Length: 66
Image 1 (cartoon, rainbow, N blue to C red):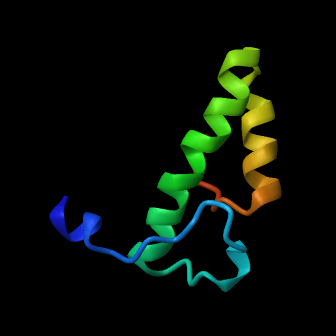
Image 2: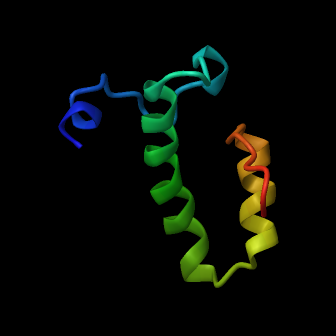
Image 3: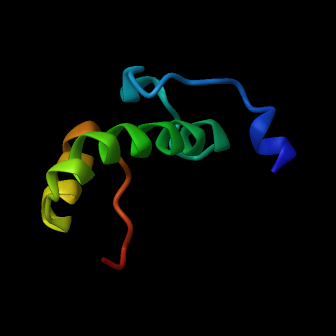
């Protein structure tokens, strides 16, 4: 956890195209994006499919098993 906390901060509003998806900094970006999305969507009681579509739009990496 300490090594993750010591990674450079990447704003969740940063352009995702500058990230290399093969390193931990991009994972930290995803960790920052998810609370932003959840804050917008959970209060609206959105469906899982809507969250997946928004994740695709902002460029979150897809997981093989949904």
